[in-house]
Length: 50
Image (cartoon, rainbow, N blue to C red; front, side, top):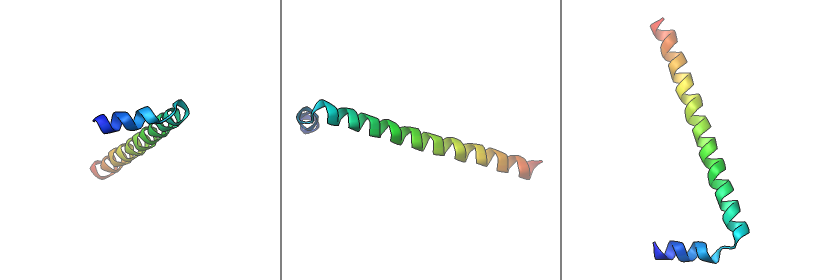
């Protein structure tokens, strides 16, 4: 943990913000993918059952 904290400490504010933005974008992207996949599976299940 100490190494990670030291690593972040050495990053300047701009880099940290960029990192946060990238993490947020990745979470948003994978979240959207999961939502689309779930919706698609539900529709497919509805087709076979109906």
